[in-house]
Image (cartoon, rainbow, N blue to C red):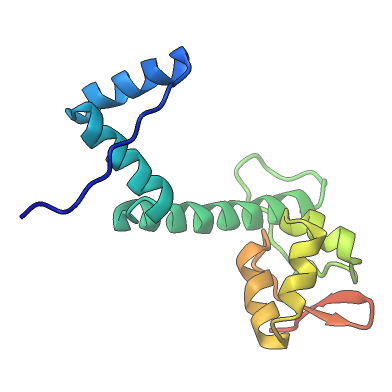
Amino acid sequence: MAAPTKRIVGYLPVEYHNRLRQYMEEENLGESAALVQILREFFDGRQQNPEIESLKSQLVQLQQRVAVVEAVLSSGGRGSRGRNSMPVMREPIKPKALTTAELAERLKVARKEIDEAVLQGVEEFKKWSRSRDPALIRWEKRGELFHQVER
């Protein structure tokens, strides 16, 4: 016995109807099946694709690593070095204490997100901030400012 269904009737703007037809062709679905699939994705969310999620994670890691390399290269002295010599980082770059606005800019998040993350606790905030910091720095709030956590 088939699952019970309900009939719906509606009117679509021409542009949405054209997009529905395109979706039907791409997915090789009839109109009812296409509408059910679209509504399922809307209400239940798309299925998580492990390969895509893995690629997203790898991309974030690569972006963070590139940011570290850029920080090292930009902090190197401007003296007369040979073309092939790599800059050597004598001491780690230690950012000064930052305000909420400055940290939000550094982590590329809204100030509200920082405030919400702080409420999750000290250790969670350290993990959260490190996952967003371009140089993988962990941060903690002391008073009204955020300070780099020593490793």
